[in-house]
Each structure stands twice: as structure tokens, then as C-alpha cells.
Length: 161
Figure 1: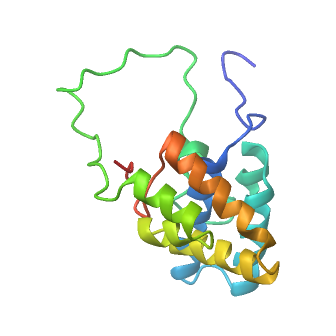
Figure 2 (figure 1 turned 30 degrees about the vertical axis):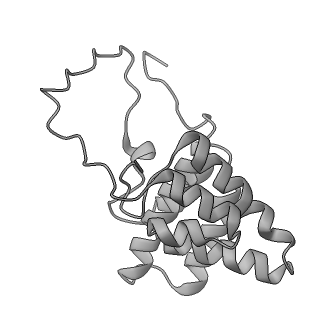
């Protein structure tokens, strides 16, 4: 492939799925997607396993696209900039990962995600719990554990403190 690394086969995680969901929400809010198109694409994002599964969902949409789809993987890794030279570092969130995680565990219906400002994800978790008569509370519970152990981001993409 002449030094080009094909990234479509790389697996994605929860953070990438959430990023893609946020960008789709923005396109929906701008009126670029109908409700049925938005719901279909969100369902496909939530079940996506690789970057290649997500890329077609943005093929007919203008920028922005999720950062993990637009960032090219360099053949040679450049040295990381020194903290003093990195002026693009976003400010950390005013929300706490510990508080969000504890809320997710104690009130397992998306309360921690409401706290972080990720309203769409919180509503999905709430609906999952209600529709499954409480059995879906496993999702927010696991999400709370992940928030406690690995942290996360708030609704604006800033790292939780």
C-alpha cells in the first residue's frame, strides 16, 4: 500500500462510538438528517466494531466528522510536543469522573451521563432501563465502573477531572 496504513479495519471503542454519536446529533440538530435517518445511523454506530463500519455513515454529510475518521495515521510518529509548546490542549471539564461514575452506579438510569452533559447517551440509557423493566440497568452500571476506572469526557468532549 505504498506507506499508507488502512485504518478502516481498526476496532473502535466506546469513546469512538460516543464521538460519532455526538457528531451525528449535531448534524441532526442542523437539519441534515431526518429523524428516521438519525435513528438508523445511531443504531449502526452503537453496533459498529471498526472504523470502516462508521465511515459510510458520514459519507454524505459535510464536516465535521468524528476526529478518529479524519485523522490520518502517520507512517512515522512525530515526537510529542512539550507541554509549554502545546497551546491547543483543551481545558479540563469542571465535572468529576468520580461523581459521574458513582451517580451511574447508585442511580443506574443514566444519571451520571446527565451530570456530565451527555444528554443523548443518558436518555438512551434511561430508555433502555425503562423498556427492559430494569434489566437494562446493567449498561449504566458498567458505564459507571468505566467512568471510575478510566475516566471519560463531558458533553463538550473535555476530559473529566
